[in-house]
Image 1 (cartoon, rainbow, N blue to C red):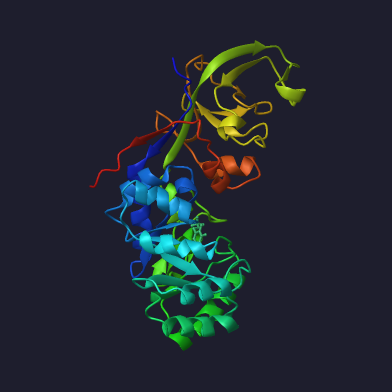
Image 2 (spheres, helix red, strand yellow; image 1 turned 90 degrees about the vertical axis):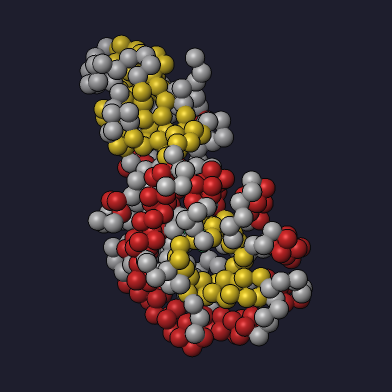
Length: 369
Ligand SMILES: *Cc1c(COP(=O)(O)O)cnc(C)c1O
């Protein structure tokens, strides 16, 4: 028997979530964000599953775009951070990519080289995230230079990123929107603004294009879930099995450091999954898992290849029983990756992108329907 740990990827759920993103902002086009290997789900498989729906894909760097092109994906791909050095422009052109321009040096590089065809450009303005982008005062001049260079740049969009779209408190979000509206009015620029939380919570702010990422994979990024976010379907189920069972009296420490001590006579299930697979070692005692479709809890520190769970209250659990670390169990029970993330003092993004290559991905669905 092979090691039972597997990441099941439901491509129909991916398509459902993409359609949900589109329906929330019907006047905006949705670029499907596939960076970080499709948030750990496999960018190529996700791209194939969305090819007939999405007008464009987004990645973080040219290497990720090359992977998609080499797999035969012909859809437009936008580089969210543009180029990292001027020499990449040749490849941008050869691969037919679109690019963000967030800095002066990128703008100069683009204007210095005459491409065979103009490159679609998303000019990035820093409206308050204070990470990438031109300050609003400088964005106007950059926009006008690009607009005056139609042989170099075409299909200009004004792009920005929200720092707090996930929060219930909309104060800072509104400040970013005000700056953007003022800038866009003066330039008559189409906007590309919303990430997943903004798509879910403030879809009226999407712009001409929106950029859903984590929501495509079924994770809810909002501080407080909404009616819309509850319609998201989980895409990844991280699934394994119990490979050994211990019966212990009360008072016995379990695992490294003896962090968890049996509070009563206990049954401990050993699960084939550990931090060497990407499961977060910060998972506290009590972090939920599904064993045979029922809730059970992490008991003891996560090790590299294994972890221990308290199955005292799941008497039918035994060697071979299904364990779901997040996702949907065979009996339909659901354990959200967001809930697991809270117990690991992190966010679903790190858990999903953290699933390591040694975990086989198994794909289901996704054919055009
Ligand atoms: C990653 C990323 C997104 C998608 O963000 P989510 O929160 O996953 O929806 C959108 N825009 C930019 C610029 C990004 O880097």
